[in-house]
Length: 220
Image 1 (cartoon, rainbow, N blue to C red):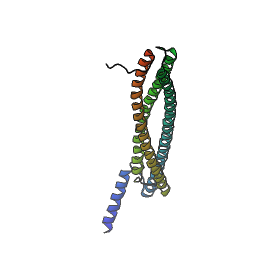
Image 2 (image 1 turned 45 degrees about the vertical axis):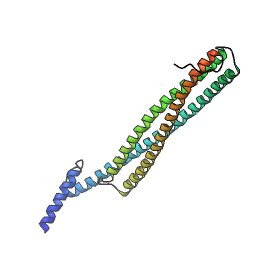
Image 3 (image 1 turned 180 degrees about the horizontal axis):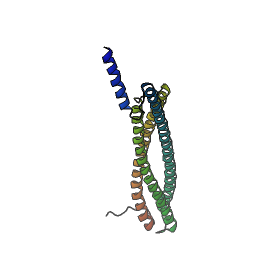
Image 4 (image 1 turned 90 degrees about the horizontal axis):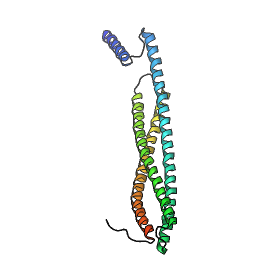
């Protein structure tokens, strides 16, 4: 029984050393102290790296949420300017005016400029959507690494407490990413529909301005 126990102990020590190749070899007492110290340093280092990755992820999401809000404000401002220009044109045409009235031509150009700016903002929304989708991949990688780190030897209770905090923050970040992607997709769809309808509307107003009155566009 004593011989089997000794062999089992030797085998266990060999497996432990094989699983932690970075631990230095040495006498039994020295090896145990080196393994514990090195393993703890490895876990602590990984925890610090994960904390930095998680914070960078949260900062990126906050910045992207700010970009979405800024783009929404820009689109809202341009939409108001567009509606004002189109409303003025329609009112003048309803009352009747001279053909190709220069004032209305100028207002039409303003309306077209607003649509062009909204189109540019839409392009930025699409780019932002790609960036946010990339953040979802980053968050998934952080979670995978956190869960793998739980099983690394040499950790202390504080390491696992930190890991749980990082895991919780990353899960919340993924929820924020999901909401942000949903908001972006909804905004992109709305602006695509708006631009399609209003480009056709502007084409009709161009024809009406040249005629000096509201008329139906000829069918092609």
